[in-house]
Image (cartoon, rainbow, N blue to C red; front, side, top):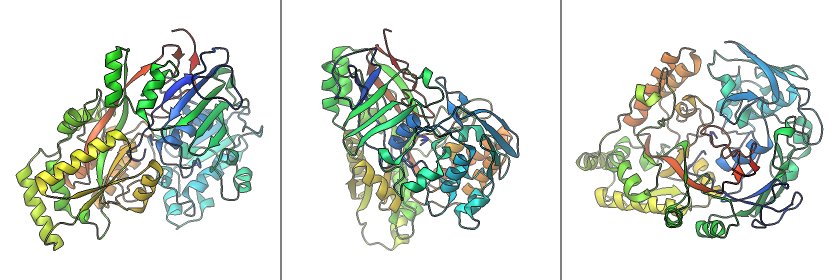
Length: 547
């Protein structure tokens, strides 16, 4: 979360308004505009499942953590790597040394120390944590062996030389460690506070201590979130908002649009983008629209576990050959900014010298119903079936998702005679069922965690627990390790090009689309940062004022 990290087909829908002079408990949105108060309100579709940075995988958790926590490095308003807790650092092929600023404090006034990073990182790779993001630590010496239970956590290649100096040893040369260090899994955790929570760290607002621009002042599960400016943050003088209140947790897009029409909110579609009905209203009203490409890729992910029908390559090929991403985007979704899916690697990623997809064009198979039916018959024979049982399709409960799944259901029935049963779940339950492997196909997605093709390239490596379908391919693993261990850009990109081809040839996934966004914004809301990588939208630099 990225997004990077969504992990799955999720997103955020933000609605912004203002509170008039509220910096304490807060009221609901729509009280007016008071620039001196410096407070905004948001409506938000999903609350985070939990906020333990060692276990967080979803976009909603990443959004909250990105505002209330800070790692060694962060991304500035231009998307460049900037100092965070570390005021300076040195990185060579073998190690990195970070020098922590003395002014970095936790929200209770205690200093952030190098030991807080040692403790947090060890928790990530400790098998007892069962972190689905343990793989993102594998650049650090011994991280992979520890996560597999082969070595104890205290052998991780990170140590505090003193309170303000952190040394990190690499498992092998790594070309992108500064980018990794901005990601949420690399955040610090203070040991004394963590242990005082008796296993509830990150479960509620009182079960967290913060070192980022804001604190989480309120968390009413299923109902409300509220950020307030962190008065102990080292860079607090640059934070211009006093509070970000989220009094609505809702997926009701009609209600959201009505709030905007009544001038009670200042922005609609800030992360998911406008849905089709909202877009119609915006066009009727002739409101100015803004566009943003969020950088994520969405796909159908198959379950490759033993005993699942979709473990069969010919069945996957059959579905791959009847799926038309162009038709999906242009005839079903029908929203500006969406691109038909062709690859796990989105169009914006940089390669060795230019854009990755220009250097390594994706070659997905063309629509071929006759060939698809041949593959389906081969699959039936290999599986020993007389007739095909229903296939489950796991998805979330948003309106646009319903349109997509109904299209897929009709397509597979019409062209292949397959019955698809749609398993529609609320956000938190869908994540749980993905993790447990309770699906044949799941509508999934991936947002970049850091600015390197590796954030997509290792997603289907056998050791990556975000590989929810549990695909295992020895050659894909080999290519990922080549890209992990090389400092040569061409060698790395060649490996990612082979990963791209393997995913297509093995029908590991079926790319659906790259999501763009169209949204409307009250011009008095300034300084909201939109970015492909990192916290998005980011209100760290936001303020209220005239355009």
